[in-house]
Image (cartoon, rainbow, N blue to C red; front, side, top):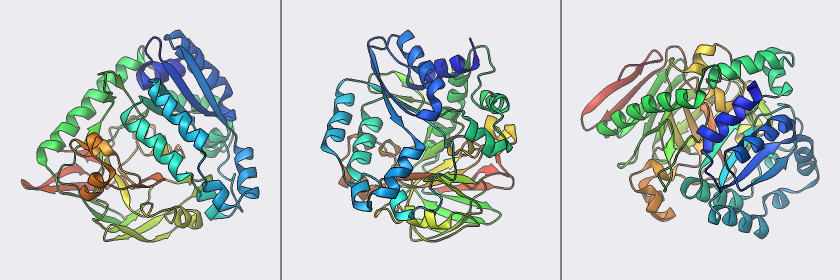
Length: 398
C-alpha cells in the first residue's frame, strides 16, 4: 500500500471509522484530487453506501471575494441548510481534507470580505458535527504547502514529515493512534479530577490567565459517538483541551508559530485580552486579517478553547514549522478564539444554547487556533485543591 493509500485508509478507519452501509460527505479542494480519490476508494472499501464530494477551489474563492459584497458572502442559503440536516438524518460521516496551497491567495483583498461567513450555515454544520455525525478534519499534502515549508515543492520531503506526524510509518497506524489516544484520554481524566477553575499560561511574551466553567470537562485523543463508535476528529492529535468561560481571560499571548488565517500568512502575532475579550492584536505580517476576523461576530473576539500539548508530541519532535494549523497546534500549547465545544461542559450536549451561554461557553462562526507553546512554556491550573503544575518547560509533569 502506497503512502497516499495509507493516508486514506487511516482517515477512513481511525478518523471517521466508516461503518458498512454508512454515507460519507467529503469536503476537499481541487488541489487534493489524488488524495480525495484515495479517500473515496477507502470509504467504499470500508462499506460506505455512498460518498458525496463537495469541491472547493482557491482561485474560485478569490473570485467570489472580489465580486461579491459582504452581505452576499454572508447570506445563508435555505437549500444548503436543508442539505446539512439531510446528511445528519442519514447518519453520514464527514471528512474534510484541508491545506492552504497558496498562503497569498487573498493578498490585497478586502479583509472584511475575506472574513465574511454564512452564520446560519456555519452553526448548522457545527450542531450536526458536534452531536449527530462522526467527523474528521485532516490536512492533505500538496505542492503549495511543501513550498511554504521548504521553499520548494518537495512532495517527498513533505510526505516524509507528514508520515512521521501521522504515524503512517508504523505497521498499523490505526492501532498506533488507539494507543496514543488512550494516553491523552488518561491525561484528560486526571485534569477532570482536579476540578480546575482556571489555567495560566506563562512563557516568553505570554502571561494569560483563563477561567473555566464550573462543570468543565477535558477531552483528549478520540471521541465516541452516540452509538458507541470511536472516532478521531483530528489526525494528528496530541492535545488535551476544553472550552473556557468566555468572560474570563486576562493578559497577553505571543503566538509562537506562523499561520495562515483566511488565506493570508500571519507572523509575529501578539494578542491582548481583558475581561475575556481581545482588546488588541499586533503582528509583523497579517494583523489586518486577524482584526477583521475577530470582528466577525459577538463571539469572535472571545476564547472558545484552551489546549495543552507538550514536547512529547510527534509534531514537536519533527522539529519543523508545518505552517498548517492542524499540525502546528499539536506541536505546542494553544488557545482558540471563537466557537466553544458544547461537549466541554458536563451534560453540555443536552443543554440549550442559552444554558450553555449561562455557563460561559462561546458562540461564533469562527474558530481559530493559535500556538503559544514551545520551549519555556509553563502551565498551571488552580482549583479547590490548590494550584498545580501541569506543564513545566514544555514537559507534562502532572
